[in-house]
Image (tube, rainbow, N blue to C red; front, side, top):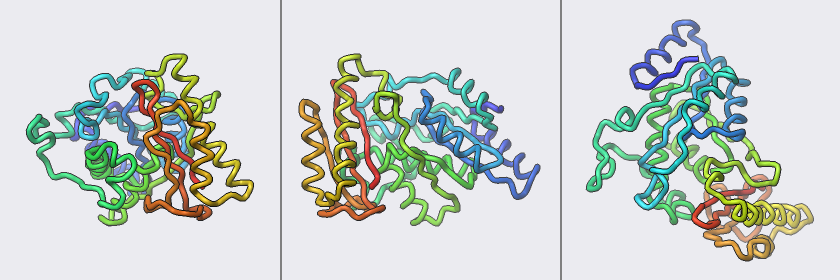
Length: 286
């Protein structure tokens, strides 16, 4: 497995794959590192569908607001690379900030480069309302990775549902020749969705956080029993979340518009809650 740190190394590696086989199929798994079994499932999905898989490990500063956890976000590159090597990944791309952002990141301009703005209807609601600069940073770095890797398929976890929908929209609107693969949420044995930020939770906080998957499970059970009215389903979920600081619990369509009734195979339950100082996301695709 190759470990690549510069754009030039990645471009050269990607060109070598084409030289070996003009019909090569390449998968990309973009990550911010601190890899866990959720990331492992994405990598395995890519390995099963492509001859080569590239995993990027980059804590992207442009998707963090000034008051967020950029400086403390877990960084475990050595163990991340070991996991990728064990799985059979072809290359890990682990650049530094200066490699990905040639224009200075500073307090006045933050990121003085061509930027990617999400659509107003989807990018500034729910997660985008709470973090109005977040998706611009996500789309910017994802576009850079798409261009550098020239991947045919890119793999994202369904836990970040709004992110997936916005990346799909970017690919559609800008005619980017790549397929976006969304993969199921992977949960720990207690039901909590796997996240690199789970390490911030104390034992007591983790116990309280289990109200999040319980709320989603209660919504799913009610839906499976025939309930389709979103106000009723939302109330069922909120009952499970008593004592939890809920930022939003919304049931919407794939355009992130609130709906009155669930539309089968086209609806999502999106949930964000804060446990202590840790902000957790979870969702349900109906």
